Length: 442
Image (cartoon, rainbow, N blue to C red; front, side):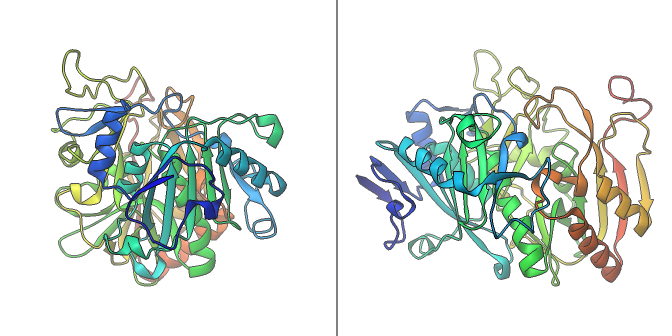
């Protein structure tokens, strides 16, 4: 077995059960991973310099194939149901063994990084994947250790990522051959059968949404955040596709982050080190900050070029409406470092109203705010999940039910307490249609 790159010398992948790997590439630079992706004919370089890849069968998350191991740690803490589906504890090791055997003779890429910009809540993450561009995605989306830190880093959570492997679902009582299984006792996530990179990102988000409120008293939020010149913080709650990334990338305000944050006793902090933006109908005129962030070091997913060129056609949704780009946070010119802000003065609930009933903007009382937060009315935007081809009405508790493993009242109670304590204004913004529903209104 050959090993390359930078690693903690005390660590070996055999510690996790890997046996006969051919090559282990530890913590390669983003440039090395880009080059490897192109060499292996897994991707192409656009004329902007960004790497482009296809994620295959899955171009969005598969929430019905996400499971949490039910054991003594989780049995009485997880809010079990349609969203948080149980996976039998006895089946985890056999599925993991099956996955590890699949890696025999293969080359893997290991990326060490961490989540949470506030070091008081830091979580070290190790991604082990068969795809160089998936390791690159982890390098874009999580926070990046310094080179010297890679020699001493101790992972808190492990992600084993095998996009080209599928299992026999009947053996494990699951719905299909692809899966994402979280084990809070083993502190491990195993992903198989899907190359959609959002499964990596949202797996760790789910972990933080479980750990931080219970163990640290930190409210975990599916929101973006930015900060004004007077150091006033604003946060934007909403499902994917409702405008979190677009609104947070205001050129007149500093970007804290576009998707995942914590609200502690000290203020708001980003969980991530990058942005994962939708690209459909993207233009420099409409979204200049995001458009200019698509350059060397960015990863574009499921786009198509203008015929005969390497210029991306952002209006081409022949693969999916959920075309995506990931890039480091500092690719946005006005990103703040570290990505931390004060307690928010304004909170925005972004609702993509498919019926055109809601007014463009409303100010909410505390009671109204709790109602909207717990009901989470919005529309799932086309492409964000497998099988969604046009906006579909949904009620997603906390504006992100698929990622919240605890009782929703836990998050709502913490939000109400913090809103009251810090006297935050709450606004409901319709980022969907006005003057009529989808296909009629504007």
